[in-house]
Length: 235
Image 1 (cartoon, rainbow, N blue to C red):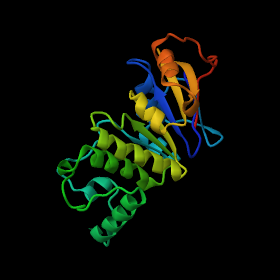
Image 2: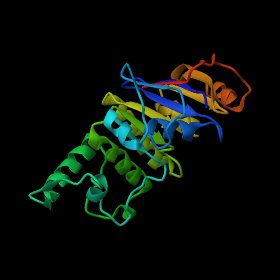
Image 3: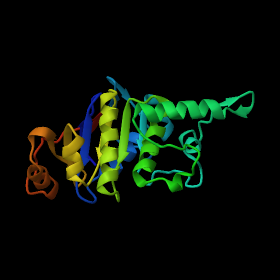
């Protein structure tokens, strides 16, 4: 895999490509779930090595995966603070966790009336929103989203796309992996096309037609960018 990519604060960068293009591999490299064997990752102007998810979190990189990794029988607050529970005098501080949960959900305009219901009872859009909100607990600078609107209705997808726009408004960088070019056109600032593990095009989304992006994905337009000798992930 030989990929160059830059992500800046306050922008949404979409990574698109066919099956086997390398999108999931790239996400794993940046999140620490699958460290790169070679290449350079730059974070805020310095070279870093991400060998495990903890390294990514400490840098300020958080990921919401397609499978969500939510406890279906656990309530909203329990899922948000899973593994990061707040305690006081040796006991869980339920009041503080609920207050922080409400503040976080309110910041992103995510409406869930009852935070004590199991997440299994919520809509797909609400569950996705919880997974994204959970990423924000560590005050990250970059959010990685893996197919955030997969298997959702149009209305649910709109809710998630609105949430992505609010992340951008907060000044966060967002890496969006998606097969849905409609979603890409709706929220992304730039799009990077991967094909067979290599860059095959960088596009300014607002000024680029969907047909141009499709041509790059399918290989009708090859070598749309000059490949770098050393792969870089500049974040």
